[in-house]
Image 1 (cartoon, rainbow, N blue to C red):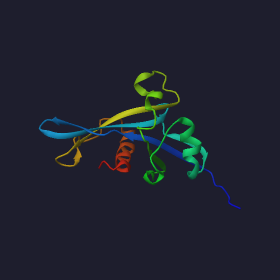
Image 2: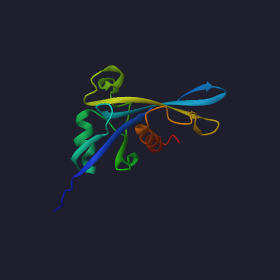
Image 3: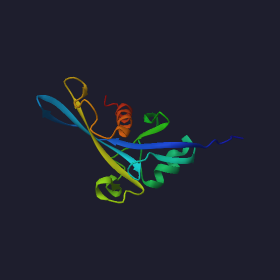
Image 4: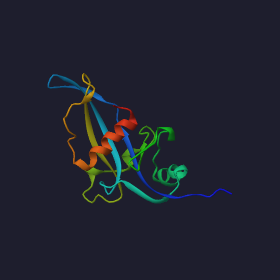
Length: 147
């Protein structure tokens, strides 16, 4: 008989767009759009009782979210980063942060990353966002394999 263990899990579904390239101050820069699915547009999705093997079935599928294969998922600092397949997931059916003043429920919040192609590093010295998002953004890019 298998004993099922449930855990409190923090889930961070995210997607990274294909980059578009621009010239900025004599630098070749790739701009990536990164979107996180956040609770109330600011908190990491927190599930109190979920088993890792059932995250997709119990959390993602009911919310019409299609992730890439589990081998691309990664836990960093007790947060499960889940890359989302935006070709299958209908992002337009979700509420975007920019569309609502209420910010209740699961909402996609968008950020942009500027990669200096010539030097393979961030074009900006610091993320242009509140500090609480910096680690999440850096980790998401690592999981997505941008940097």
